[in-house]
Amino acid sequence: MILRTHYSGDINPEMAGSEILLAGWAHEIRDLGGICFLVLRDRKGLAQVTLVKKIVDTEMFKKVRSISRESVVQVRGEIKSESKAPHGFEILPKEINVLDMAKVPLPLDPTEKVECELDTRLDSRFMDIRRPSVLSIFEIVSSVLHAIRDFFYSQNITEVFTPKIVAAATEGGTDLFPISYFEKEAFLNQSPQLYKQMLMAAGMDRVFEIGPIFRAEEHDTRKHLNEAISIDIEVSFADENDVMAMLENAIASAYKHVKENCQRQLEILNLDLVVPNIPFKKITYTEAIELAKNDKSVPIQWGDDLDTETEKFLGGIIGEHYFLTEWPSSIKPYYTLQYEDRPKICRGFDLMHPRMELASGAQRVHDLQMLTQRIKDKGLEPESFEFYLDAFKYGMPPHSGWGLGLSRLVMTMLDLENIRDAVIFPRDRRRLVP
Ligand code: ATP
Ligand code: MG
Image (cartoon, rainbow, N blue to C red; front, top):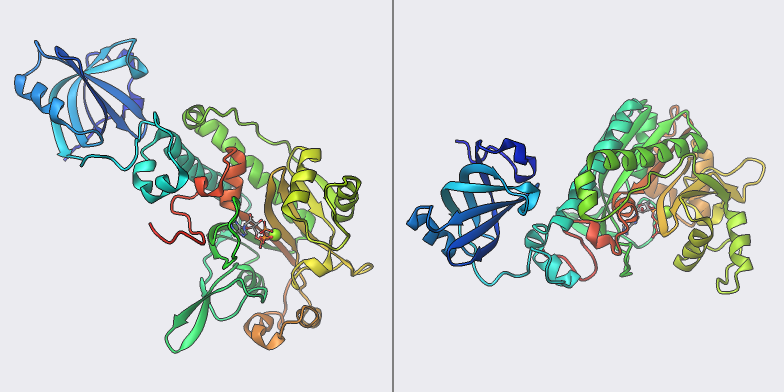
């Protein structure tokens, strides 16, 4: 059964005279007495269906006037050029079917004429996404993933999946969600880090994973969620500079792909996307601290992690994507490789957008003895990491990798205020439903 032959956005006035079948939502019904307009919305735009009382079937005219907004309708009709209608055409209907009638009142207005609080929107997300600007964001998310996957395949990187139910924390600490797993306690994984490193010992050479990470962080900010999608890679026989190059290329290819393939969505969002220039600047942690210290409003010492205020201050000065390199070993995880000649500093890096951190990565420790020592130095117990350490006993290549937050990439790309705008069903401290 054919329920539709075209999307509204694919129709143009040159197609006048053809008969088509459209299906979508009743965006608006304007009843002017002698003439009635049904504006049908599908995911590619709007189509005006025009019914002139004197010409069309009386039953059809009556039916259209009774349709509630947002009902699902199907229209068979002929295209006519009409400069005043959306996309320059209208449909003269031969048949109109109501496939499902919507209840009234609506939980929110999908026509975007009325502003709406984020919480109300998230409560009725299915209705919120009917708004063209919201739909555009999620179509762009998909396009970003398409570009990044293509980039990975072009680099001969193998896609993998690692478990999300795990027995141990990646980095120790308390940011874990415990779950009951038969007679044992288990956790939702914070990061695929340990598993993707183990795959380097497996000889998979270069892997990527796009999947959820879970963080039981208490904070409630505009850039943190308790469940997020992380884009992760791990590459053997590569140092931190090699994977930084892959990261900037992945980012640039995502911007380019969106610019080329999502013009309509960018127009709806009123955005002129600028593809960032690569290579990105590299600034050492020490240089960043010096810059921040010159500014009296950011009190910071060498060895401190960068707080939001410092990130924003640096972003303001630098004004574009940049890498922060050569971090103090004390504030990067145990698996980050230190410089041989100056062990206080390590080969960890962060990729920063002027607004926030987008990714963290490093060359990793691949020597078993060194790794065991680093775990102890961080106050953790090597016994809890046995399954991971085993992979370092029988030939582990040097390797590097990173993890990039998908929603942070999208929110900075599209200049969204809140990470929740870039996630269909966000999970935060207060939200577990829908
Ligand atoms: P931040 O310091 O900003 O909280 P992080 O350093 O704890 O981030 P990492 O463990 O380095 O985060 O994770 C790698 C990337 O995953 C981050 O740069 C970010 O883009 C994303 N990410 C991490 N935690 C979250 C979260 N709670 N919500 C959304 N994205 C996250
Ligand atoms: Mg980080």
